[in-house]
Structure formats: C-alpha cells, structure tokens
Amino acid sequence: MRKLFGTDGIRGVANIYPMTTEIAMQVGRAIAFIVKNKKGRHRIVIGKDTRASGYMIENALAAGICSMGVDVLLVGPLPTPGIAFITTSMRADAGVVISASHNPFQDNGIKIFSHDGFKLPDAVEADIEDLIFSQKMAALRPVAEEVGRARRIDDAKGRYIVFLKHMFPKKLTLEGMNIVLDCAHGATYGVAPFVFEELGAKVTTLGVNPDGKNINHECGALHPELMAKKVKEIGADIGIALDGDGDRLIVCDENGKVVGGDHVMAICAKDLMKKRKLKKKTLVTTVMSNMGLELAMKEMGGKMVRTQVGDRYVVEEMRKKGYSFGGEQSGHLVFIDHITTGDGNLAALQLLGIMRKRGKKLSELAKVMTSYPQVLNNVRTTSRIDLENFTDFQKAVKKMEKKLGKKGRILVRASGTEPVIRVMVEGEKKKTIQAMADELGEMIAKA
View 1: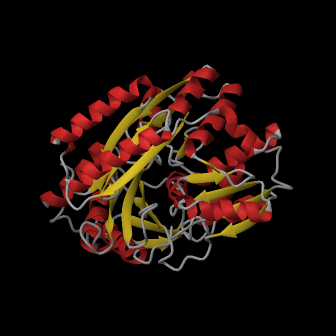
View 2: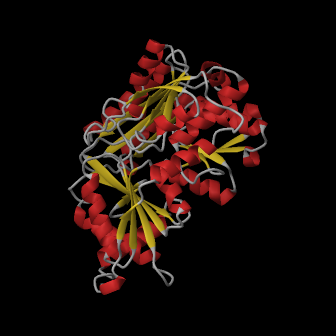
View 3: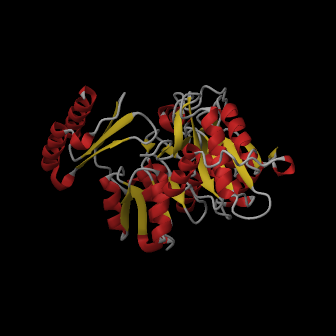
C-alpha cells in the first residue's frame, strides 16, 4: 500500500499530513539521495503554481535538497510542463512541481520529474517512500562546502515562452484571430497571454490575477462556462481554458460550445494521420475516453489503446510501445515528439495550427467524432470503500452492464487525487444512463 504517492504525485490539504513541511523536507532529501549517483555537483529544479502554501512547501523542499549536498534552481510560478522543459534544458538531475493541479487552493501537491523530463515511475516513488520511512538517510549529513546552495532562474518564463512559440508552424501566424484565454489564476498567467499575443492573436484574458487563494475558483478548465460566455459576448474565434498548473486545457468553439479533450484528440490525431506522423496509427488514451473517439479512430484507419486513468500512464504506454500522441478526456494532451508531459499551451497551439492550415472553424473540425452520451458522478467519501467486496453494488453493476450490452459501459474507480469515487456510465440513451449513474452513486453514498 502506497503511503504518500497517488496517481499524480503527493497531494492533500496544505499543512496537514501528508502535505506538511516535515514530509516535504524528507521528500527533498530522498530525491537528492536518489540523484547523487555520480561525482560532482547535482542540481534539482523547483517550480510551483500560484497557491499561497507554495512558499512554505518550496522552502521545505529546498532545505531538504540542500541538506543532502544537492543544489536547487528555483523558477517560481511556472506551468508543470514548463518545469519539465527547464529540467531537461538545464541538464538538471530532477525537477519538482509544487501544485495540486485542478484542486482548490487549500490543497497542494508535489510532482517529480526525472532528468529526462518524464514523471517518475511507480517503482522510484516507492523507493522515495522507503527512504523516508526507513530512516536510511538519517545519518547522511554533508557539511562545509558539501552543503547544497539555492539560486533563482529569473528568465525561466522567457525560455519556456520561446520554446512554445517554436511549436507553432513557422510559416503561419495568429494574425486576425480573436482568442479568449482563461488562465485559472494559475501558473500560466505569466506565460500563456504572451505566447498567443506574440504570435499575432488578439487575446482577451480571464483568470490572470492570482492572489494565492483564487486558483481554479469558478474559472479555468474546471469551469469553462466563464470562457464560453465571454466568447459569445465578444464574438471570438475560440476560447481556451487552462487548469491551475497548465498541463491541460478545455476549449470552446466560436458559438461558445465546449469542445472536450476527446474531440480535440480526434482533431489532432486526424491531422497527424494525414501528415503520417501518428506513429503506428495509434492514439493512446484512458478508460475514461468516449466510445465515440474509438469509432472515429477506426473510421480514420487508426486505432485506440486505453490505459488506466492518469496522464503518466498514458505516457508510460507511449514510451513502452513507441507511440507519438495520447491524452485524457480531461484535457491532458501529450505530443511526445515535442514534450514529455501534458501541456495545455502546446496543445492549444497544435489545435490553432490545424485551424489555420485548414481554414476551418473549430465547430467544423469538431464534427470528426460524435460522442456517446456519458454521465459522470463524483461521490465524496469520508473513508475507503472496498467496492470489490460490496456484493449488492457489484450485482447492480453487472445487471446494468447486461442491459447496456455492447453499446455502453460502466466504469467505477476511486480518484487518485481526491477523496472521491467516480462513477461513469456511457450508452445510447441519456435518460437511461443518468438513472444508472444516480442509482450507483446513491449506493456508494449510503455505504
């Protein structure tokens, strides 16, 4: 049983176990211990989103790393993919992101990248937990000139902005395009507006005034209705909503209709297929993606591979099998030929490039797939529920699955980032699947 790490690093309410300064310092010491595998100085990048608690966790992590004789490079607020980029660009030994992504401001988290910009595999996270709880590092105390040092990298944002602009087709610009951009008062507020403006777009910004407490609050990818309303109000060409740490996006078309991650993946996969750049003609996504996406891939002459939920598992499958593109319904899109993790800004630029090249509106491009009706119920829990041995619940699921047949499915899973059990039901009739999801949700709530 994992003690600290979930599906996307360590996460919880800041200043309450496990997101305490004591644990953060020990995590810093453990990461430093693992990277010290060769002679010479070692360096670890630390970046964060805009949560007030980020200062507290940042200082604890830095102290732990320096106490093990490893240097720290502080980049301040920067999107998660930006920290992965800086880690590889500066040839650092690891990168650490202080963020709880889409969670509310009182939460925080720690995500770790290896020297190659990829998230740590489960086995290495298990090693970190072992180092922390076994006290194997207790006696390791470098002294004098062997103690690590910390310094700030002031131009990290600029480096990442230049990198993103290079990801847009060189012969194209965004001149004449009107974009609504919602940064969720998060880590992209100092990056994303400059990227799109410098490429020539007229940008109307939302969520660019972080105060440490308003990250993700009624804005960004979690609440795209704000962006959609603004698009309709000013007659923009597209709306782009990023989440708190900038690793995913949700967009809306010129009519203010929200276009989810599955549709964006279908659009991008079709473009890559035409350019013969979708390796093995395969899109990698998770069990949460709509059946309509799978049908769309078949119609294109490609196929879709599913993994468990979490962009890290999508990336692991891509690396293992040599695939080039994948993502999640929630808006994590990974263009592995360009970057090692989900990147909302980069995904938006790829989508905008397709719109420019084909001269089509997003509403037209989105017709590439038709979604099956899908209902997702998030049931909050106060304690762990063993669903496998919840006999009445399992009987209800099997009865519903039989009724849906091959034209629907049910997925029930515990969230790896929140105290929530997610119930997803997919099928042809919205009324039927809504009733099923409600019934299963009520059973969990009562349990």
